[in-house]
Length: 244
Image (cartoon, rainbow, N blue to C red; front, side):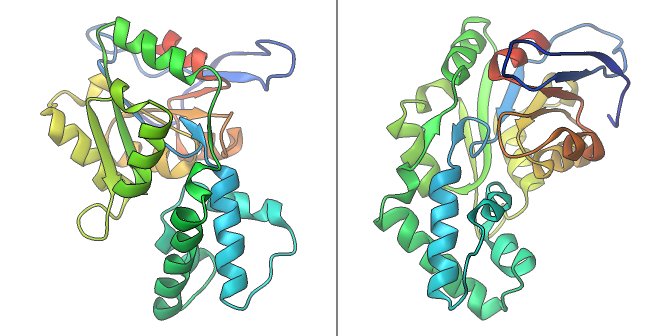
C-alpha cells in the first residue's frame, strides 16, 4: 500500500483529464483481483445534483444561506453526520434536525433520483461479470437510498453484496468495507480492490489493507488521491478493467 511511482501519465482521449496509474509492489503470485468493491455516490452514479440540492434545502431551512452552490460538492461522499456536524459545525441536536430535513428533500421531494449512471459504468460491471469476478457496493449511504438508486437504474443485479452505512455498527467507511469482506468470507485481502471517488474510500481501504482506485470522473481529484495513498488513479470507468 502507500504511494507508488507513477508508471505512465497520458491523455487518453480529447476532453478527458490525464490518467495516472500507480504501480503497487509485485506480489509473490500474479493472481488478479477477484472482488471489486464500489462506492456509490460519485463512483457508480452522479448523485451530486440531488445531494447538493438536499444540502441547500436543509441549510436554508436551518436558517443559513448558500451563496455559492458549487461549494456543496464537498458533501458528496462523506456521511451526513460528518457533513453537518463536523464540516458545517452544527451542534449534535441541530445535526439531527438538519439530517431529517435533508432526507425530507431527498426522499419526499425527488432528490434521490436527481441522479444518473456515469457513462461506461454498466459496461464495466458487465465485463467484470463476464470475467467471473465479484462486484459489491460499499457505500456510506443508508440502505433505503442505496436500494432506490440501484433498483431504479437496474444496477442491483450486478452485485453479490451491498454494504450500506447505518447508525450503529457501520458509521465509518472502513466498517462498511469490513462488512462486505466478511460477507464474502474473504481471507486474502490482496484479492480485494476498493473503487471510490473521495479520500474517504482510499483512507478506509488503506486502513484495512486492501488496494484502491481513485476515480477522477467523480468528486475527488488527483491531489486528494495521491495524498491518501491510492494504489491507482483513473480517469474513466473503462480504465478500471485494465487493472483486474
